[in-house]
Length: 339
Image (cartoon, rainbow, N blue to C red; front, side):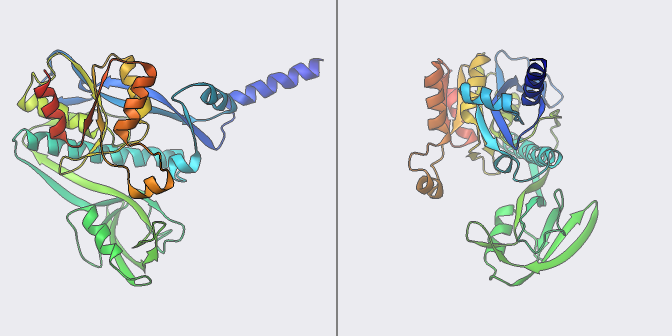
């Protein structure tokens, strides 16, 4: 009997501590942006708050898996699906790159929309992943910056991608990149990517640098990802151009931001709705972009971010208003027209 009890205790212990090749995603926090952002060395003392929202991600144990199966708004993801095969350290670093790019785009959009002079310089693309079939596997590494292809430089990652896509399968291609402060180059071949297009087999994100006379400081150590771009932009714009825009309300939201002010889709929006409702937000901005054709084919009932957020809000019976936005200007206009 003692042996059975002892084995039971061991099994219980292991269920709580042994990580599985899965992660669980849960509602995270909905935090006041003033805790992590300071604009023009001035405190934002206006009533209400802008909130940026996070999703909690952690390695799953057996106990976590059971919890996830029994708890709404808690999802189980494979390690490959969550990290793309990166280690925990690499995954955190990748998300810090996303956060850095998000902050630069937010500075650019917030100040530009407020009528301030600002310059956004494109420095190249961070390497986030290298596919196993890439001829640059073992040459390019996570955090390297690709600055040119075939000695051509570009003004955006889209231009770089379009150029590489236009090359023929098997063509030789020269990549210039920065690694640990040194400029290097390497040659490889154009391959077929998973999406059927031609490329060199790297995952990437813009590396940019912002120059402005208006000092803007972020303190986001330990927080990663690109999804706070919209709310960061809105907070910067408000403090510079229209301090009373919130009008005492707690306003939450999510979505990436690009150099044209477009709001991009994000993951885990249902969990972000739950987190914001818990913190008393009155308004939640949600990206409202059409579902891609690929996603529609794979999942005919697929919903976009806004539709998913609406569904979550209905499920938890919150009075929080879910507002669809496609651009930063949409969010500004809503707050102005619905004081």
